[in-house]
Length: 113
Image 1 (cartoon, rainbow, N blue to C red):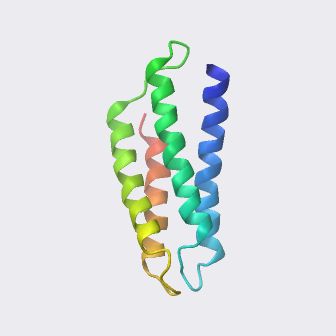
Image 2 (image 1 turned 90 degrees about the vertical axis):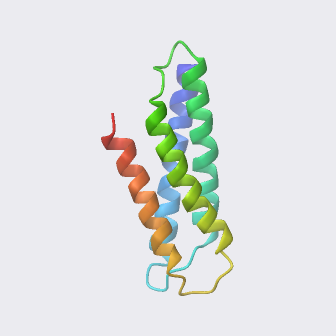
């Protein structure tokens, strides 16, 4: 179970990287592209799976449920904005908001222990 958890963790991190690279790709004419939308969706699903595995497994430390809840809310807001405004043409200023929420989520992941 530990190996599966580690693999999913690295895929989760890769999904966040995809979102940020998708943002950087269109930063001059901000738009929410498929990289951002799909990366957020994958990161959301993998985050739920990681919390579930950590809660159910004795091999992995129990998750911090407060942190998971805050990160879930931030991700849901970013996910909702990304999917609801993805078809808007450039410039889409909400792309900056989605990227900022992603950065907040990554900072929360690495600073909140």
